[in-house]
Image (tube, rainbow, N blue to C red; front, side, top):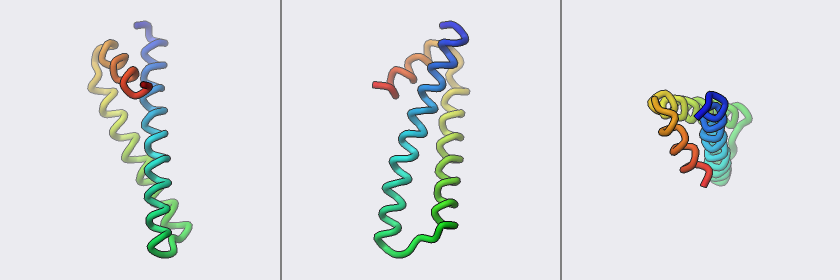
Length: 80
């Protein structure tokens, strides 16, 4: 795997994390709104928190993938 291929694989994993984050954030905000009013500040706080959590998890996974093969497998799993 070239450096560029590894970068592409890592980007695919990050994209997947963002997709999951947005989907789950949308669900959570709908549930919160159904139970009462959610302010713009609360929405922003939940969104920022979700970004931080997902970024921390994804970066930790990628940091622990010391081999290119591990990154490639992870990218294959999340893009299927």
